[in-house]
Image 1 (cartoon, one colour):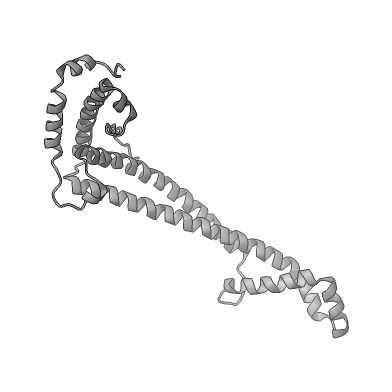
Image 2 (cartoon, helix red, strand yellow):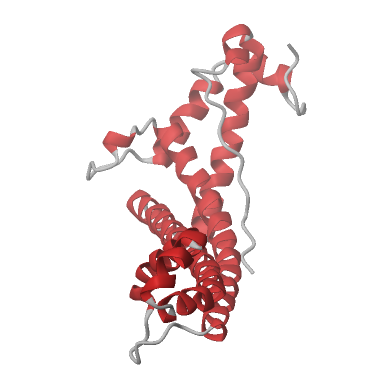
Length: 231
């Protein structure tokens, strides 16, 4: 089973309310992000991800597989709904068939009277006959309940397997998507910039960011060794 190396999402310093309200928290967040992006790089390296394009490709592939699995589950559920409706119609058809057969055997003198007394049942049977025509087999027979139930059970089993697969893919997608979001946020890459052939170096950006943070040693020292900022 897939065991993701979970990495938290970077703090969006520019839009974080606490960062706007407290310089101390802002400085802590910068240091926190440095530690987090370093961890992100370690995980990326462990996954054998070569570069940004490789990372983006993997996220895209997982997203595609996630959608494909969801679509298959949806198709199976829709088919089960169709089968349930078919079962209901078949049961009603077979219940009404004796009434309709009795009606067809009546002579003309009794037919109208019988129809008046059983109009609802006869009209419904005729409607069901038309609705069931697309389901006739090659032998021009209606499908058996055994066949329908067998298909329904197969669909339920397939949904169970696909749901388990969907869960695993979702975990993988969520995990790798966070890696990409962290890189995008750290390098300030917008969605419209992903197609650019040359991406900024994350290692260079990391070095520059460390240098910027280290310009405030007194604030860095103030928060050193603490898990949370002092507001």
